[in-house]
Image (cartoon, rainbow, N blue to C red; front, side):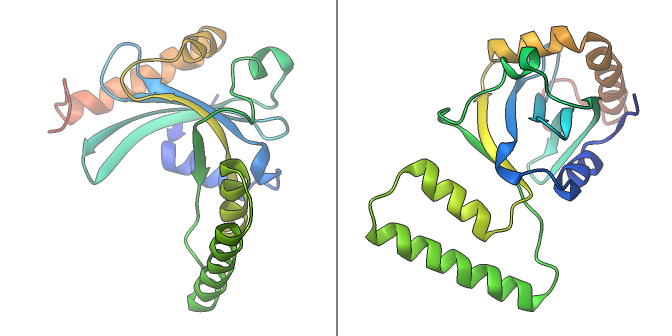
Length: 183
């Protein structure tokens, strides 16, 4: 297992050729300290564990690793289904002005189409993510004040990876002299 900066892992996720709308996630407070834990999973791309904290309102730091090469039924049972109320997305900036204009035009078309037609929030979200060319999006179980039970279950399944990444994050927190929140 290779521990890397969390942004590098999201870059890996954004460069996979996996179906963008088949990703699922679960996230919440870290079990023993400042920050948050997040598992991103895709049936073919695998399972990623990210541990982050907000150094300040403009800067997030952290580490993570790919903890499984594929998503099996047991692990998948701890991740939300499509009917989940929460959503997440990974985004990439446009490569140039031409692509930015193209994305903006597609997004405007999606908004206008959904404004005038009967639709669902899920369909609108999916169409917006397609228009933005999001490389990964889907349902997410998230609790900003606590830890979802599913997060604890996944942490138990990937206990060794969880402990190793926690240790790396604790070293970073100590170097930044963080013990309860923003510096």
